[in-house]
Length: 372
Image (cartoon, rainbow, N blue to C red; front, top):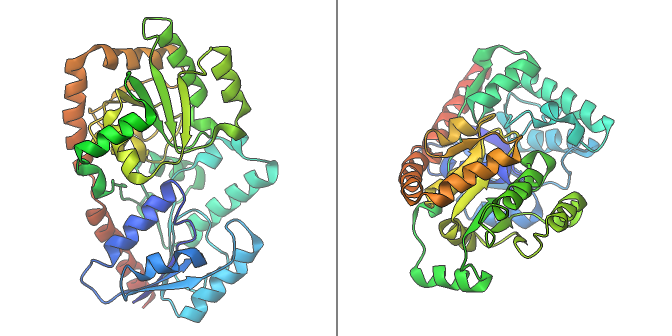
């Protein structure tokens, strides 16, 4: 079977991780399926290196544009695909074959106030509605996301399949001791620090995390630092204002994106990993942190309790003092930290890209079989 996959978001935060691991595992399966991957020109070499069953097809259509509504179906038709998998909620109206769509979350419907304008709200509502009806099968990454999809899109529950995300295997292997020391010295990490990994969009709740660090400074943790990895603060003036209002400019550091190996070390050096997001379809960073042995404090909402199980401290993300109390609980108790590290590693190993990809491949076969 010749299967088309939209790979244009190969480097996005969550969807990019999903795509990269899905493609790596699909080519390891012992079958004769071929994969036509719509991609950016810069990604052709990486995709081609995965093996002869991957066929990169360059497209210049940007996501969320009129052009993708025409060019994506045309390239699928030219490539002769029997099935198309869209890894996010936009499914072009003219797709010429049966389709599978992955809806990671319903954040645009849950928090429409974070979208740039009213047109974006209508766009998200229509294409979520369209994709979940047009697709033969809807995949999602948590039971929490499935509940949201059923609530907003009103489709039969049997049409939605939950296949959890997982972590890259690289997070399970400890880095060399000299590399750990190199990263420690480079960033001068000789004092306890809280680590956050992810973007800084409003629902990530960084404002309350900064406020929680302020509470901790007022309660004896006056040297505690907060490191934010993976996003640039320049677009978020309110976070800069909060940092200066609490006089934390020496203690809150935004490092932007860092190399993967550096990230793995930072997870291991962190005194505690904080992820007080208001909403997540899955929440991969807490799982990565647990795999690296970082004790985790995260939200008691959406999918996060489902992901971390009993291997993290759960807090109310709407209350900065509750976040601070959760962090202080971990920082003050070495036995709790050791227990969270042990349980976290065990929890992280229970998620598998290999098993998840086999489940996706079975759905490809079922949907392709329906068409035949």
